[in-house]
Image (cartoon, rainbow, N blue to C red):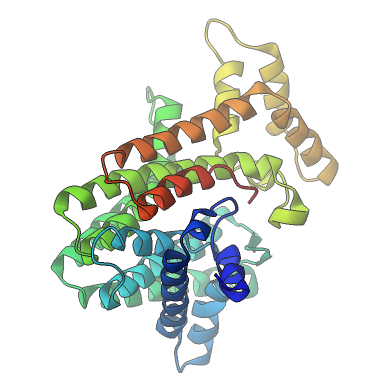
Length: 348
C-alpha cells in the first residue's frame, strides 16, 4: 500500500482500525470507494442557490469519520462487492446522518460541531432546520432510484431516528426503567442508521437475506457501542488529539450513560451511595465556569461509573461480533470484527 493510500485510510478510519493494512487489495478497494462516495456526497449536497449550497455542504466539508459509508462498502464486499448502487446507498446513509446533526444541534443548542461553530450558530435555527430537511429530501430522492426495498429501509430507519429523538426529549415515562429507556433511545437514534448502512451494503452487494439480516443486527449493536463510547469520551478525551472539550455533554445537560449510572447509585432506594450523591451534586450544579466543569468532570472520571460505562460499551461491541460469528472467515469479516472493537477503543 502506498503512503498516499495509507494516509487516506488514516484520515477516514477510526483510530485503531488497521486491519485493512493486512490486505493491500482490500485497502485499495475500500479507499477508492470512499473517495468516490465523498465526491458523490458533495455533489449531492451542492446547489446553484448560494445559501442552501453553503449550508448543506457546511458539515460535510467539516469532516467526519464516515462510519456509515465505510460499513456500507465493507458489507458489500461480503457479496459481489462495490458497485454504483452500493456507493449511492453509502451516500444516502451519510446524508441522512448529516441531516440529523443539523437538527440535533438546534435541539441541544450545541455551539460546536466537529470543532467548528454549529450551523445554527453560523446562520440561525430556521436555516439549520430547513437545511436538514433539504438534505433528507435529497437523500430520499437518491434512495428512490435504488428501488422499493431501499426506500422502505430508509423510511423505517428515519421513523426510528425521529422516535428516538422524541423519546429522549420527553424522557422515560413514570415507572419506566431509566437505563432501559436510554438504551432504547441510543438504539433508535444511533444504532438504527448504522444498522441500515450495514444492511444496505449487503443487499446491494448481492448477499443472501440471511447475511443481510445478520449484518443489520451487527450494525445496530455497533451503533449502540459507538454512542456509549462517545458518552465516556466526552469526559475522558484529550482536547489536543480529539478536538473535544471534556464535559461538553455535562455542561449542556445531555443525558449520558456515566451520569445515568451515577444517578442510579445516588438514588438507590435501599442503598444510596454517598460518594455518588456527592459527584451527582457537582454534575447537577452550575457548570457555567470552566473551573466548575473541570471539577465535575474529574469527579465523574474518578468514580467507578466511568469504567462501568466502558464495560457496557464493550459488551455491545461483543454483541456485534457475536452477530456475525457464523460468517465464513475472510479479511472482510476480520475488518468488521476489528471495527466493532475500534468504535470503542478510540480517543475521539
